[in-house]
Each structure stands twice: as C-alpha cells, then as structure tokens.
Amino acid sequence: MTRETRCLILAAGQGIRMRSDLAKVLHPLCGRPLVDYVVRAALGAGMKRPTVVVGHQAERVKEALSGLPVDFVLQAERKGTGHAVMQAEPLLGGFEGDLLVLYGDVPLIGPETLRGLVTRHQKEGNVCTMLTTVLEDPGNYGRIVRDGQGLVSRIVEAKDATLQELAIKEINPAIYCFDNQEMFSALARIRPDNSQGEYYLTDVVAIFVGSGLKVAAVVAEDSREVLGINNPEELAECQAYLEGQRPKRMGG
Image (tube, rainbow, N blue to C red):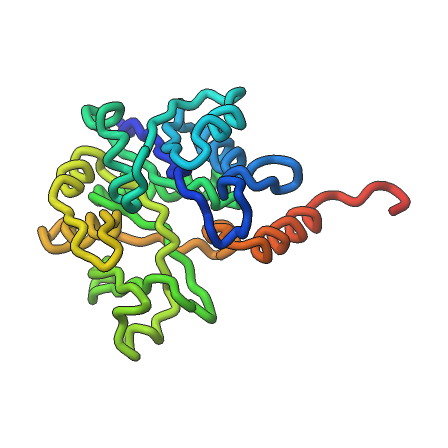
C-alpha cells in the first residue's frame, strides 16, 4: 500500500537579490505569482492541501493563493530553511507518511517530476530522496557527493568544498522527499552553528547519513525544472522560456 504523502512549500523569504520590495514568491511570471506555479504542480502531483510557510508579506502571499486548497504556517523570524520547516511541526509533526519539501520560487517544477521523486522514494524505502541536477557551471550550488553504491554521502557547500569537490557537477537544488517522522526527529537535533546563525535543512541529511540511514538522489534531466528564480535576470529568462513554449497564434 502506498504511503500518504503531504507537501510543504517554503515561501517566507524576502528575496533581496530581486531588487524589489515585493516578496520573491509574489513576482509575476506570465501573469501569475511564482508560488502559484509551485502550489499547482504539487496539487497536480496528487498532494492534498499543501502547507505553505509564509513570512515576508505573509498576508499578500495568502491573498495570492486564496483560491487554492492550501494551509498556511507563519515563520515570523526567518532563521534558515530548517527553521522554516520547524514552524510546520504543530500541523504536520504527527503525520506518519512522507513529506515533499519544495520552494516557492521554483516555478517550472512539473507534477510528473514530483510524482517520480515520490515513487522512487517509496519504492526504495529511503529515509530521504533528493532531486538533483547536473550543471556545466555549478557555481555556488552545494555539490552532491555520492558513495560507492551511488547513495548520497554528503552535501558540500561551494564555499567549503575542496578543488576536487568543486569539480563535481551534480548539485543540490534543495527539493526533498522525507520520511516525515524521521525528518522532524532529525530537525530537533540540528543547531545553528554557522556564520549566519541559521538552522539548515541540509544538516538533516548529514544526520541521516551519519546514522546509517539511506539517502538517495534522483537526477532531473532538465535543470530549468528545479532551479529557483533568484534575480530579475533569471525571472526574465524564465518568462522568455515559457513564452517560447506557448503555441503561436495563427498568422503571427
């Protein structure tokens, strides 16, 4: 019997690099806010009532999603991705199934890709299955280090990577399917021992690996699907891509 899967969408950030007062997830893409695309992808993948973590301009984000079947939790102080997920514990902590964690600024993620991730996660009985991708220029993305069996052994942030690790082209876009109970158990153990004083969701993966639990990765072939929008230039590129996918009208 297939385990029930729920979805958590992180959408609390301000998005300073967008150079705008508008919350990042509210920036319009072909007339719809970025977060709208993510919620609809989750619903299309069969997720019932995704939970959206809101923070910056929370009421405006709620209003933008008012026509969709979602629940909201507030991240009043933004102390990292792990902290954002912690805010959902009163709502999701007792759930015994799998949790899909997405970001509200990744508009091209498709329902089929999400279904494939969940299916692989459940078929293999992983505690965590990550969606990764391969980039010719991985830049500042965290690198995926695999062990001899092809499982994830670590995620190395670019600033902490050796030259050998920097040569790895498989990166972490931070899209996960977790065993929900194991995830909240590991979240309780992470600490903000970093220069930002934040709780990082990637530390949960390190705890799983350190405990001998199985963390796998599925590679998304089309990187556009899994990469977030971080600045106006990337938003414009995404808009141009989507407009290029639209059928042209007769005669023009």
